[in-house]
Amino acid sequence: MFLRIANLNIQIEAEHPDLKLTVKGPTARFLAGPNETDISVSARFARLGSTPSGPLLFDTGGVWRLFQDGDGYELRFFVPWSDTPYKAASFDRSFTKGIVTLNPDFFSPNAELDPLEFPLDELVVIFHLAQRGGALLHACGVVDRDRTGYLFSGNSGDGKTTIARLWQNSGAEAILSDDRVALTLSAQNVMMHGTPWHGEAGYSSPTSVRLDRLFFLRHGKTNRITLLNPAETTVRLLARSFLPFHDSELVTKTLELHETIARHVPAYDFEFLPDESAIAYARATKESGLTGGAALQIQDNKIQSPQNLSGELLARTSNGERP
Image (cartoon, rainbow, N blue to C red; front, side, top):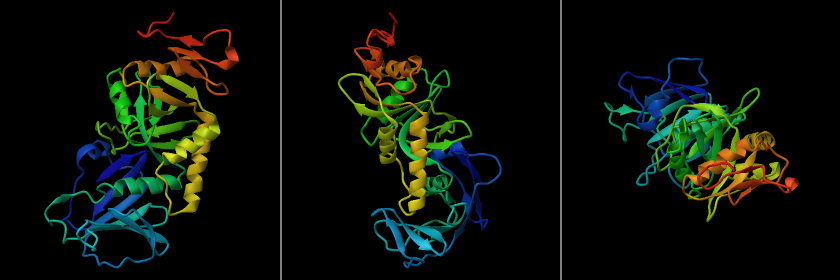
């Protein structure tokens, strides 16, 4: 079975014919054909003991824990009522090759199973992306009707799902996700990729697009957009990223990625109203032509810059007409 997530080709192979592979829900949209493999996973049934192979590196206090396993890592997954893991995954240091062990005490041998069932699939992508200088972000990704790529980042409750629904009703070509979007660097662009890990609205798409505009969301009593400097952008990106805390070198790589994004992609603080007027404000940042270096603000339906006090750069009335 093959998946393609964030331009990563993942191959999953069952070691025994009784293990029937499947994916469910949005992940099925990311099924792909055979290709050059970035991450290779084999799956098997075997009983798991309660003692891990190495020292504890990270404990979520919930479903999973990360342990050292020689030069690599072991992820163990638990249910609340048992100290024995229902699943374990051993990976090399680069998260390119792994073995997933499913404890038969928790699974029917005839069931169709997804060895990378969430959250393991997300963790593998996070850790592998970090090796390549990529990252997973709390964000809603939008491909507009003209193929412009907008990214709306925020923590829980900041409005990612709300903004996704507004764009869906405003003619967007695709909603990459309303909760988690992957970021990578290509030769010339920052790219954003849809993922299967969606929010309340359930949006997910395997589409990838260049990132053109970055917004940090917050609900407000008006629509207001303020251009951010690279330092502030970097700090906000880091605070909204899924970081590989187990490895300081990977955290440094993630920071370097965000510094690069902050230097090359215009980023804004976006206080917004939960109606279609917010979409016009986001689109207006592209039409203004400003890409940085100015204290851009949208206020009273007009984009203004203190560096151009004699007049407005772009104005919109409440119904979207230009004066």
